[in-house]
Length: 101
Image (tube, rainbow, N blue to C red):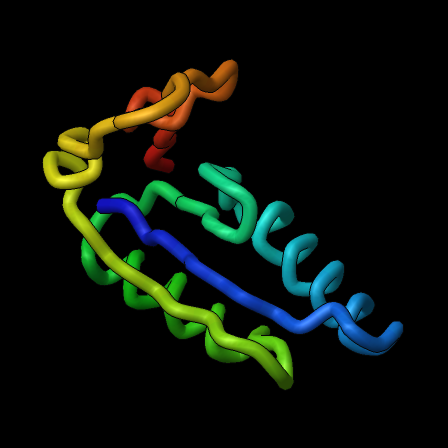
């Protein structure tokens, strides 16, 4: 499964910018990969793991702005089309990256 996070956070005041940086660093530290600006995705082993990721996002949400979470299957994610530009990444973001301990 994939957990996709869409966010639109205010960056008007210095406190807003601090919250934005903190949330973005949280995403990166927890294994999210940037797909587009303000769109991050993370690979999850199953729906229970995806639910846990979503719960952790709720615990670390910023105080202002909009944060949305979408959970999709790997098959649905792979059907995503790039209409303009290149869908190219140097980062392995397939299930090859998933390590089960």
